Each structure stands twice: as structure tokens, then as C-alpha cells.
Image 1 (cartoon, rainbow, N blue to C red):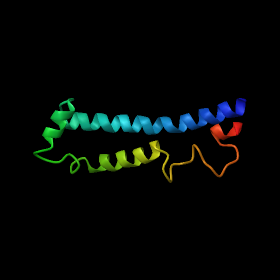
Image 2 (cartoon, rainbow, N blue to C red; image 1 turned 90 degrees about the horizontal axis):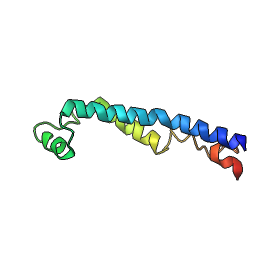
Image 3 (cartoon, rainbow, N blue to C red; image 1 turned 90 degrees about the vertical axis):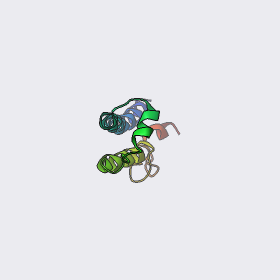
Image 4 (cartoon, one colour; image 1 turned 30 degrees about the horizontal axis):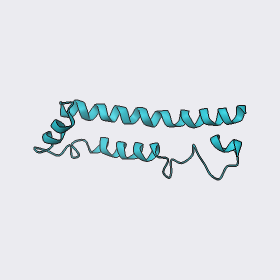
Length: 91
């Protein structure tokens, strides 16, 4: 039905900003560390741990990760309390 499609589109539209923020956060880390090889990023942390100067970015990554996995309080796209919530329309 068209309501299920609209609900799924709404759910997908709510998840896109979290994916964009995670991508920008990862780009920020890559710019600050320099190398794009994951083993070189780990080796660069021997001198100073990247979590200290990039603490605000670490907090934003944690919040975006919670939102991406639909943990509370970001579980609105698939709210169980609603009778009509995206993919639940067909049930």
C-alpha cells in the first residue's frame, strides 16, 4: 500500500543524516591522523591517543552510532507504540 511505502521512506529519510554525520566524522579523523591505512592510523596513536584531541568528535561518533542502530532515545523510525509505523503497516 502507499502508506507502507511512505512510512518506509520516512524511516529511511530519518536514518540518512546519521550516516552522513558518521562519514564526516571518519573523514575528520583521517584528515587529523594523515595516513589512510588502518594499521598506520593505529601506529600513529603510539605518540598520542587520538581520543584526547578529538574528544568532541568521539562523542559525536558515539551519539551517531546510537542513532544508527536505533537505540534509545533514537528509536523513533520504528516506534513500537504506534499502530502505524513504517514497516508495521502491513502487519
